[in-house]
Amino acid sequence: MTSPNFDSRAPFTEPVTTRTCSHTFCQGCILQALSVSNHCPIDRSPLSVELLGQADPIVRHLVEELAVRCPRLDAGCDYVGERHLLGSHLKLQCLYVQVPCPCPEEGCELRVARKDALRGEAIVHQGPTVEVRCRCGNFFQGPESSQNVTCKSCEKEFPRVAAMKDHLESSCPEKIVPCSQVENGCAWKGQRASLEAHVDKCPYESIKGFFALHNTKMVQLSKDNERLRRRSDELEGVVRILKQELERAKIALGPWYRPVYPVRPPVTASYDQHLNDEGAVTGPGRMLLRGMHPTTDGTSHPELRPQISASIDSHLASVACNQPQFATSLNKHIVAPLNLSTTVEGSLVGLRESLVTLSEALESQGRRYELALTTEGLRVSEEVGSLKAIVQGLRMQVSLDYGFPDHISIVPWPGDFLFRQQTLTYLCLWVRLIPNTRSVSSGDSFRAGLLVPTRPK
Amino acid sequence: MALAYTRRLNKELAEIHAGTPVGINLVNADTFEKWLFTVEVMGTSEYEGEKFLLMFRFDNAYPISAPAVQFVVDDTHKAPVHPHVYSNGHICASILGREGWSPVLTVIAICITIQSMLASCKKKEQPSDNDRYVPRAPENPKKARFHYHGTCWRSAA
Picture 1: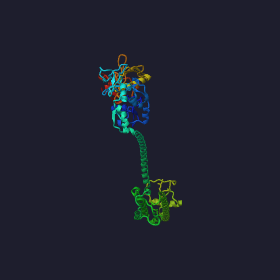
Picture 2: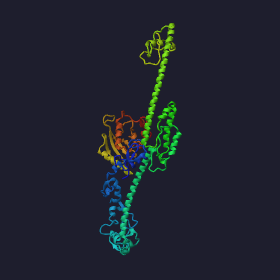
Picture 3: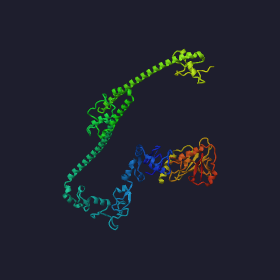
Picture 4: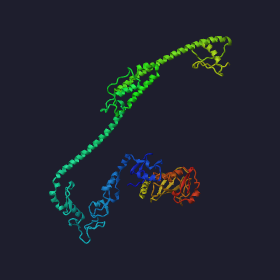
């Protein structure tokens, strides 16, 4: 049943699937094919033995459940059953499979069909006459003696081996048998005839009731044991999972994790000291620390706590340094330090409030900047105004000497049109260094002060 | 081990008896050593009306190893005139060589491949090295070494 025939239309035996191209083959077939080539037989993609894996369970089950006939069909076996049961059928049941000859002599190596072996006879007992020789050649008795078979223990004669065997096993009085309580410990052995006498005085026999009770109790206990063991394994698994989740939860909570059984007393002093060393935050803005603190045993990640407060405090310190003119106002509206004495929720609320404060501070700063800019802008325009007046005066002086160039088009400029023209005419005399410029139409967007004189046509 | 190839050939034979493609017909499959088929090219082609006899020989490693396939050349049959078919009936086709053969290919698949190889031929001509190859050719085409050269397989017997 296991010889490969590489017929991709026949049901697989031990199906395997390639990991790269997902093609399925019998294990034997593909191993054979791979020994002569190195590609998949179906699509020629590169393939090697390492890339084979067991086929999907569904394929295996489909193949296992196929109805097959017994391979000893020609010998007469008409068994039909699921493929995966065939192995045990052949091993234990099939009547047409060869098994060792049951003849009582040792050393007989003949094999006979199970159907004959089950009859309990050394074969070739055919017809009314009885041969005393097993087909393997073993003699039960010398050829010159009678045709009967003798019992080994009591020398009684029987016509048939089966009867002799039967006699030997169940009724021969001379045969050495153990006590019926041999499983419970009785070590007596003797002839069957004297068994009854022994049983009357066998101590194990007299308490056999106890043995029976004891045995049932033991069986019950083992069953219970088994059940409890399984339960305990399950619970261990559950505990392991819970432990893992707890670890993760602890890490997530960080300093806010409070174990049920704190290992060491809370360490208040170091926390206060730490904040004072930072020096960034003092004053009315700082919230008071209450009694309970995060524990400092190994499980609560103490390194996180100083880091969190350190990072926030140092940030605030740097903020304070960069804005010296606003330092005082910031210190008044300062963000409270991370308060680790409340719950997670409390800390988050505190943080939010700090954020609100910060944004307000930011807004007011923005407003201040705007104000400064506007003032600056005003000043600049005043200056420009005065410059314009000066230039006007200069123009008056110069116009007496030079006259008025013709083709000037001016980029829009806020203010009086005529005034613009007059003013900038003279500015462009100073920009005569720029040759080949073209006029720019007044529709263009305002570029601060850029003017483009034309060449006279 | 011999059992393996007979089981596979039996299965193929059952399918062949159930029906072969048009133009391909079984002539003889009495033994497991040698099978004979006739191959005709259907429709209009250079080989219209011609019938060829194709011989398959199997060894006991089939289907892991390819069968030996050739056209029969005798009094009643000739090899087709085709750039990949030598005048002694040997065929150079990639699927019949060691590198091109796959165990999922069947006898019918080979017949169809050869049929289409003939059908797609535009010009009837012999292979360029036909006269060099045929006198030296081994009896079994599997023993001849074909290598790919340009657009056509050429023999290096």
